[in-house]
Image 1 (spheres, rainbow, N blue to C red):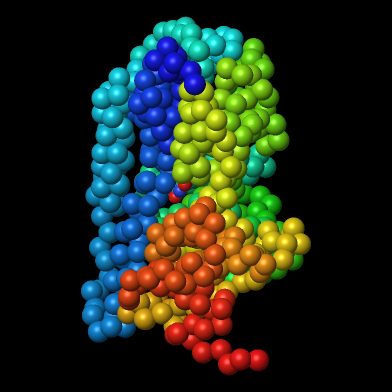
Image 2: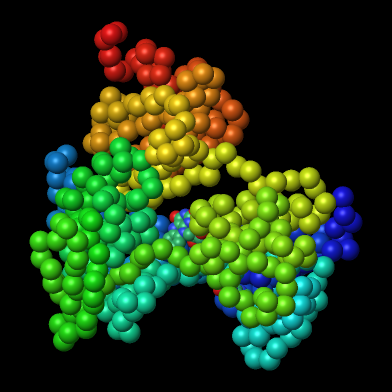
Amino acid sequence: MNDTSKLNIAVVGGGPGGYAAAFLAADMGMKVTLIDPEVNPGGVCLYRGCIPSKALLHVAKLIDESRHAKNWGIEYGDPKIDVSRLRSWKESVVKKLTGGLGQLSKQRSVQYVQGKAGFVNSTTLSVAKSSGGDERLTFDRIILATGSRPAIIPSLKLDSPRVMDSTSALDLKDVPGTLLVIGGGYIGLELGTVYAALGTKVTVVEMMPGLLPGADRDLVLPLHKRLEKNLEAILLNTTVAAMKEESGGIKVTFDGPDVKEREKVFDKVLVSVGRKPNSELAGLEKTKVQVIQRGFIKVNKQLQTDDPNIYAIGDVAGEPMLAHKASHEGRTAVEHIAGHKVAFEPNAIPAVVFTDPEVAWCGLTETDAQKNGQEIRVAKFPWGASGRALTLDRTEGMTKLIIDPKTERVLGVGIVGVGCGELIAEGVVAIEMGALAGDLELCIHPHPTLSETIMEAAEVFYGHATDIYRPKK
Ligand SMILES: Cc1cc2nc3c(=O)[nH]c(=O)nc-3n(C[C@H](O)[C@H](O)[C@H](O)COP(=O)(O)OP(=O)(O)OC[C@H]3O[C@@H](n4cnc5c(N)ncnc54)[C@H](O)[C@@H]3O)c2cc1C
């Protein structure tokens, strides 16, 4: 193991990968410099990603619930939406969290440099400081955690305030009458959900035959059904061929076999067609770091690049581009720098789509098992048989376990339903601990909760679920 107190580390980028790495390195006794253009750490996740989107989604859920409450004999009337107060509240959440990270940074004696870093060589950075001037700093090791930015389709680039990316959509300048969301991935669906709840007529266009491409279809179906009710339209197998600004909005031309209306005008358009890694660091060519397909930085299981002094973590180092993957990679990189024998080899990185209902999965998916020709058994528990789901009036959910038929080990968990983003953590623990379906069945789950559906899916696997009856064949 290295004498960590002698190590001088730079972390470039203050997102969940970067600040987690910087704080752990400082806790392990290293001298740490954290460089980021913002006034405090936080990165995309806190400033223009996970946190502001979830704050707005919470409000969207409240609005939807209040509308739905008339089914239970309670009427609230139409909500009055004060967009500027809503925006201020969301910004206060961001400020609180990022300010807290600034404090934590100081408490750990992490040197925080506000600016943008480029390379002079493998161990020296040149930092263009936000306050002006350049500074050259030399380190033993450098961790790149520069994250990602919204991807742009050149043919759809239109310089207009009516065309938004996820960052400007979260700014919530106004509530447009109509909005086209280009891209049916999780960011487009989450932000579309927010605007729809606020009163916008939202249309989603997706070039693939289904929403959330890559996720198991049975998990997406209940979400699709609800979105069909809450959104103006979902256009699948459809691409946007052109966009043109007109006096009244953006005229969009659609293309594809299922297109019924070829041209339509929208007040605003949100382009959410994926994210691009920030790997174009100045002077990177002066190091041995390799940039591979789609612009990701090439790393090994220790998150070390082809240049042994330089590590890369988070969105810039590959899929899945998720905050919790970034911070865990940060841990591995720092521990490796400290001389520990470590590797980033998770069996389950959870994915959560915070729509309503939520969709969550971890470990092996049915889609991937089919692609790999892997033999699996799937046990599903429908939430229509869950007491808790009935009390919430949300029975469209489903919990499924993907199980190795020979060992009975849980290989994957997929859930759709309200709040399942919290439930999926049990799946992660089960997979990482090598649990068998029988372990989940025997663990006593609290009643009445949605967590019982995981236990009951395990019971389904053994053919004796208490709350559903399947006659023996
Ligand atoms: C709308 C939206 C919602 C999302 N929701 C979720 C969610 O619910 N859950 C989830 O897990 N993930 C979510 N994500 C993804 C998540 O935000 C990213 O996976 C995560 O932020 C990646 O962390 P990171 O540390 O790799 O980099 P980032 O958070 O991207 O931070 C990188 C930082 O590096 C800085 N930087 C770049 N270049 C330099 C340089 N040369 N010098 C200094 N600093 C530099 C950037 O300015 C930035 O501050 C969401 C993303 C978006 C856009």
